Structure formats: structure tokens, C-alpha cells
Length: 278
Image (cartoon, rainbow, N blue to C red; front, side, top):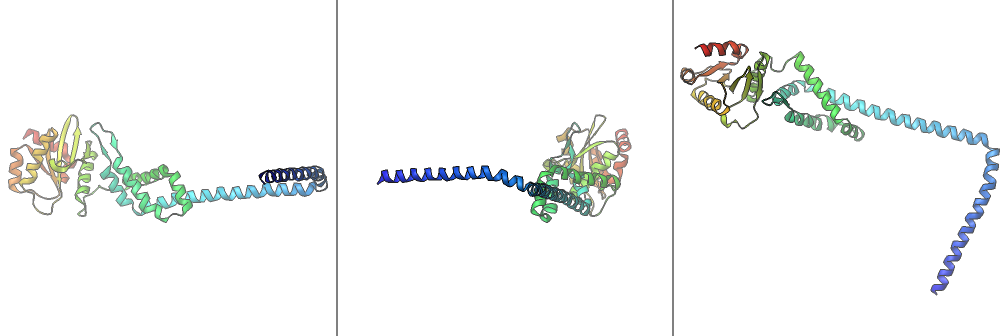
């Protein structure tokens, strides 16, 4: 039985090969004859295929460009809608190390979150694929918009009653930067009471920023005394939008600490000279 099945299988394979051989022979004789008779039709078909392929390729390229343009437009539009918040966040999050090098880790995360939550949800599947491909370029789109806004309308050009404590710290740092100091907001634990470190011409300032509605008492002075020692700073400064109590002023003088209003930061060099002379 097994021998018979093997024989029938071999016979079937042989028959199939014979059929293929006959078909190949017929094709070898008929195709050239058909081509000779219908050369014009074949040429027309070939040209039509080329044109169709070119049209399809063009449509695909146009679609890709359109999707890319939409992603850039959506990113720019989202940045424009939230430009004030983005400008403030960049000034808060970009800081410098002791050697003046910008540390962008927090700002990079902020931009990524912005893309994920303000741009990506409104994209189609194809546009989302484009976003992943041009991700770094889109971060630059946000950066350029923010930098242009901060040049045109600095986020911390003026004090606002709506500042959060973090925004007030950034505001104070940028007031100092504006008068030539290398100032940075700290991102350390606030246990030691240092909010801003500022350096210029070999002098190092440890600054505590107090955003208050009422009077500021001794506690702020005590904190900046400890902060100055911890940072090894030349001077300790408390900066506020409010006023200090008489006891706070007395304790500050005893410990060679400056207690300033934020407006004093624009004249910080003169204030330090007066403090040194006193």
C-alpha cells in the first residue's frame, strides 16, 4: 500500500512537470507573437503603469508633507496659546551650575510633557508618527517661541501679586542677572533656607526669598544666617515683597545679614558697598 502511494505521488509530480513544460513551450511561442501584434497596447499599458505609480508616489509625498506641516503648526499654535506659562517655566527651570553651565534637565522634561499633553492628543495616527520622527525639532520650535517671548515681553520684568513662591525666586534671580550677577535658583532641599545663589567678581551671595503678605520677623533672618554658613557665602540676604519687623532689622545688623525689598536688587552692588562700609 505504501509503495503504491509513493508511486502515485511520483506519477503526479511527473504529470505536473509535464504540464508546466507544455505551458512554457506554448508561452515561448505565443507571447512573442502577441507582443508583435499588440506592441502598441503593451506600450500604452506600460506608460499607464508608470504614470499611475508616479501619481501614487506624489500623493504619498504630499500627504507626508501635509502631516508634517500640521504637526509643526499644531505645536506652534499650542506654544502661542500657553506662551506666558512656558516663558515663566523656562526661567524657573533652567539653572546654572557653579561654573556657569546651563542645566536643562528640568526644562527638557517640561517641554516633553507639553508635547505629550498639549500637542499629541489632537493628532491623527499619521501625524503622531510624524511627531515621533521630528520630536527634537518640535522641542526647538517651543524653545524659539519662548525665547522670542522673553526678549519681547520678559516674564519677570515686573513683580506680580499672583507670583507663586517659586516664581518669586525666579523673579529675584533674574533681577540679579539683569545687573550682571550669575544667579541661579537652587533645586536642592530647602532645609538650609537657600533659594538663590548669586556670584560676581569672586563674591558669593546666599539669598532667601520671602513672598509674604504680612511683616517678616526674626525667623527669616535666623534661616539666612544658617544658610550663609552652610553655603560658605560672603553675604547672606533675605529678599521680600513685604516689610521686616524692627526686631528682624536688629537681628540682621547683629549677624551682618542684609534684609532687602526686591526693588533693592537692581542696586545690589551699591547696597553691598554700603553694607561693607557700615
